[in-house]
Length: 233
Length: 378
Image (cartoon, rainbow over all chains, first blue to last red):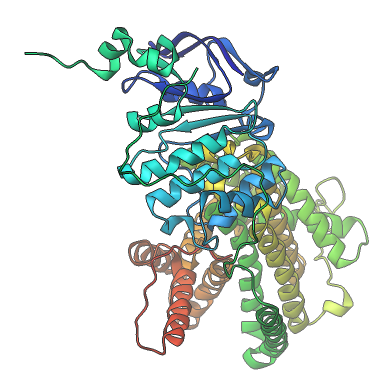
């Protein structure tokens, strides 16, 4: 369980997040909303990159907001980025080894996670990988150790539809261990619908809907704010 | 509660999920060198070391006394350049106080050498350790800085050291905390140990110590610290998300590079047994950084080339009767040329040439170079 309680973020006169309270259950939950709604800012708060002016974040009985960002990773929080943050000059293997070394996971995890995502050339440099391979490598890094909370920021961005579908079983796999929370941001609604059990919708920094995906998607407030409505002539 | 997932009958069936943590077959990729390859690698390393040793011992005889002194300086500044290279090439830190740290090492070496009797290698280690503390203290104030701000802070530190060196001077056997001869005291150079009396021996000894410093940095760069540094250099949020303790690894980088700069200072002070404040102006740290960019900021070979340029080119120009300050123009032109044509410097060009040669050998000379990957050689 991931509990976000009254989180408010202020950048000067702008409030990208305003009193957001959300409880995320184990499994895959989608975080959707229009551009500028505050989705990535919320992930940055959970990762420790942005310090909220108010509110708390806790999970598995521990206060995450009291931990430094790298401590959160060592605790079990994994994060992928919209613009992937791989070390392009390192090999595929060393990109995973970097995580293994710094969170204290067993060395055998390197081969395990690379095998899990299907990256078969661990000695290639990350800089020469295709976009799909980079996304797979990011997922592999998220699988290292025993992740408790996984934050995926648009893993399907920049991918062809068929490539994005390849991510779906891997995202499910991330949420397989009991108690693991996966929070997914993506604008690819097929991907979101295929993998997310629950959805939370942000608009202008406020949570406007949360609940089972089908119910949220049928919500007229969500349709108006994000999904759009079909006009009948 | 779950939602029904739409099923496309034409879509290929997704791969069956593999439980996380399930046992896997060992990777079949040829990622690890074979025993034969490893043996060949060790053989080449031993051969290279033997050749290096023979060349090092023969150089003083081959080049004469003057050039032996010049080459000794080249080796010393290559060590200082290696510090700047690691900080910039791995972490993206523009460190503009490297020559000042050499001065700190030299000052410590002379002060301790005049005060206590220690074996020369221990004096070098002491100089390195004190410089390491100084370098880390400067770094602590700038841990949250990067880019231009960090460059300016380190340049200010170099300026401060220039003022301190000029005001205080370098120890010359005097009494007091600063070890400076005053009044009726006679200044004295710190004598070299008997076994280090000749310039030829000093060159071999300096090269051996420099090799150890390079090995230390190479070991760090190739290991866990090096991977963390590269992650930090590429993106701090990205590094934090992988669990890298950014502060700790920045301090490790500052400590190790300051240490080798301090050792370089000790070696520099060994030559004449005294140092002059005019050798450590803040400007020289900028010049050293520029030369590191020319030599190659992403490889320790680049630092070795930088040392040759920094201390060797002025001597070459001097031989042709060219005015010494012209070296700044030469380095400036070299820097512009390097940044335009080869951002990875001369070391990067050499690396690419070697890769191309290997590629041609593999394909029997039928294809040209097809290098697209960036180099990150240590």
